[in-house]
Amino acid sequence: MGDAKMETYLPPYLEGNGLVKMLRDTYRSFSQRREALGLSNPGTVENISREVQKDVFLTRSMFTGLRAEFSRPLSVMPLFQYSHAFALGSQGIPPYGFTALLGTSRVFMQGNIDNDGQLVAVLNYQWNKSLVTKCQASIAPGPGQGMLQLDSDYSGKDFTASLKSINPSFLEGGMTGIFIGSYLQSISPGLALGVEAMWQRVAMNQGPEILLSYCAKYKGVDWIASAQLQAQGAFTTSYWKKLTDKVEAGVDLSLEFAPGLRGAGLMGGGAKMEGSTMVGAKYDFRTSTFRAQLDSNGRLSCLLEKRVLPPVQLTFAGEMDHFKQTAKVGMAVSIEVTPEDVATQAGSNGQPPSVPF
Image 1 (cartoon, one colour):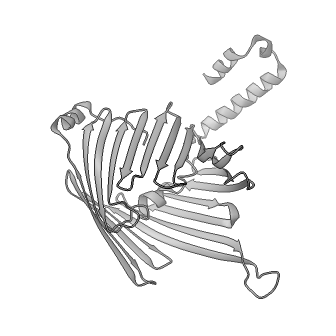
Image 2 (tube, one colour; image 1 turned 180 degrees about the horizontal axis):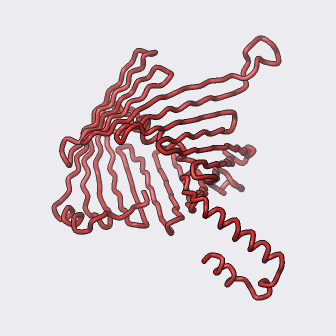
Image 3 (tube, rainbow, N blue to C red; image 1 turned 180 degrees about the vertical axis):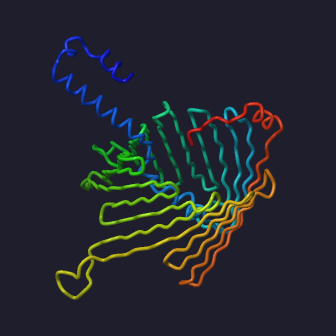
């Protein structure tokens, strides 16, 4: 079908061209062999270790102190709800935050404002099944506290190409900001290789900087391994394993190589190497989820999420640093109150819309 369309769109004076015909035959042969491999989409470079970093490890979910969240959905199609969040004794979390979100099959919008006046807005738009554009902006009191991030992800059958820009600007007489481009391609049913390039320039009085990193991902039947060789000598690798239907485990290793002075010689003493290792596990029960992790710095962390009632969820978090002899604990309660008309709407509509979160 694709070749027929290609021939239809060719101008008449190119149909008999020998070079065009050779290129067309080469492309057709390459596409057929590529299709015969049965390759799948490998995901994005940014989420190459998603199974370990987001699904098993609890670093991004860890908190301290007391938290409470009250949410109320107002509609299912489109998805529309708001929530109030309260925090006490939590590091890095404001005492109060208000969030509202709206989602359809193509658009997702979310806004959050806290008691300090910091505003965060997110907009995702799905142009088609392959292309998604994301925009995130934040405004906070004080100079230099604003941030703008633009992302675009194109997902093909066996590859993903992404473009990202952070604080792009032309106001200083030239281009400043951070620009990142990445490409991840499936080579075989299990192996995917990728590359990421970053161009950054803080100000016009400073020169630009270009960094390259490479990555690889291999997916087995019930395990996934990934590795990244980042710029400036950083190397990370992760391994995820599904032990049973309800138990997952993962390990992550990070190494950093940097020039150092390991001696009294004028020429230095070689490279300085630093590394860390983290091991974690996740257990899914009928109404709860338990995650635990241990790193090489002596920190043991645990997180338990328990659904006590359909609208009520309790979360307990704890961390113990054996080297520093310190401990942290946290508890959170989340309550979702769904009006009867919204529950009836959800039941009558069946599946909710696939929102591009």
